[in-house]
Length: 188
Image (cartoon, rainbow, N blue to C red; front, side, top):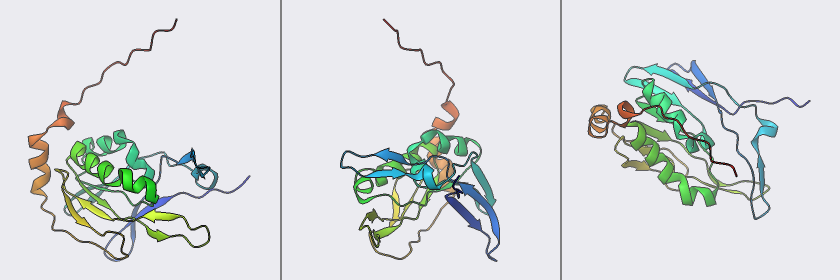
């Protein structure tokens, strides 16, 4: 069979050494009405573990792109102590315009975490596919602290870690989460 690689995110220390890696868990496999097909699972093996890293200023939870559509991953990371979340991504122009900001702000609000979301921007050589761009930094209250737009470059923002506890104190959803049963639908 074909050899698969991982869609992997790396965390480096200031000296350039790998601290940890995260392999994307959720593969983007879809057939769109316009005829476009995406089959990440053909080229990439799915990861099977969430990853947290201890940093001098807090705990960082890692993810990649399509993972953003699975809020339970981020709640699990936050419940395990994440203060910050990363979401490097290459959203298409269509899905980015519709969902990128909303999803990132929702994950920040749900978890009370800062979200760092570097994003690929521009047009792919060959097939002309467009990626949305708009790298973002989102605060734990859901406010956008920095937005790169569609330009190539980098963004920065002042991070006040006290805002994490403040947001979680005002909306303590992480501590109010409970297990519950979901009944099966009645069958006729």
